[in-house]
Image 1 (cartoon, rainbow, N blue to C red):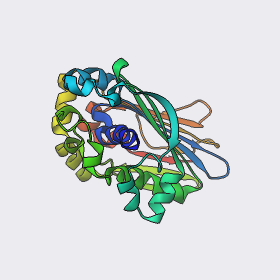
Image 2: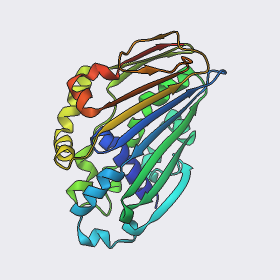
Image 3: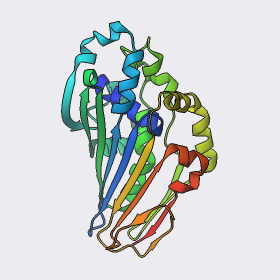
Image 4: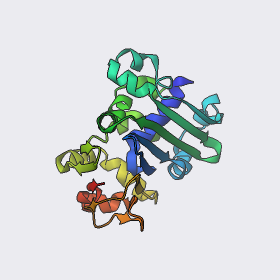
Length: 254
């Protein structure tokens, strides 16, 4: 069961925007803490990909599983992954929760990762390492039961959202995309993007940041600042980002 949960999480993170509707929510508190929610809705992609898996896979108990639950991120990982993690990575995972809403027969797969960073430094560490922790798992364990399906083979999707650099302080949230790393990501995932386009799978991406105090400065022409200046919303899609990666840059002083 643990392997199944982590397979879903892995696919959500590694597919990234190519097959997933992604929403990032940040809620900054007065005490300097910040709640982060990464929401991955793979339902549209799954509705297409289900038609590509073998009938034998569809008959497995895993495929028939229906779940709507929240569990600790660390406890959702395979034992082999836990044994290789550093103390800092373990602490990060243990302080995060994984919510899974899954019904493959109805093409519902929604995953969210929830974490509350105690301060700016903790937030920066979390953002720089959460996807790496997921990607460090054994691929053989993650692909159990799907090894005969190219559409679900995680080996074809090993990429990480490590193309951002962060500068975060109690009054600043800067996220800058590294174009060289982003181009490397695109090269690794080119076939997945092409498949998503061929299947008419949308690739939306939304980032919402809520602040306890009004935003003093926002440097992103596409981002929308609320009337009370306490909320920033960036809505785009991967087609736009591929053409202009700088769309994902955020420089916010608050």
